[in-house]
Length: 100
View 1: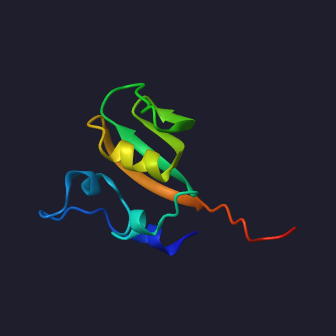
View 2: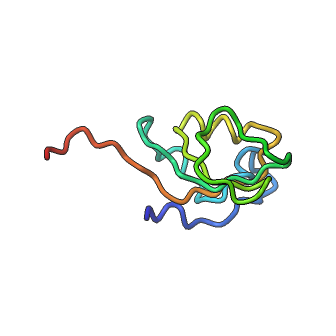
């Protein structure tokens, strides 16, 4: 697991609204490559709502689910008013330099 995921929930008064939703270390988004896929647990305010920018993986209850998303998808759901919290659990990196 990526150690950048172990940060506290950001609740500073001078933080932007979208970072208040992200339960990860502050440098998490900046450090993501554009090719990375983020797996996360997402809590929303409306039952059965799933943001268009994510791929639903598992529904835990009507307002809580796991999802996969791109870096752009993560940024999009952080700006979604119906999304309350995003807790990243894993990052999948596509490394094109590896050989089998």
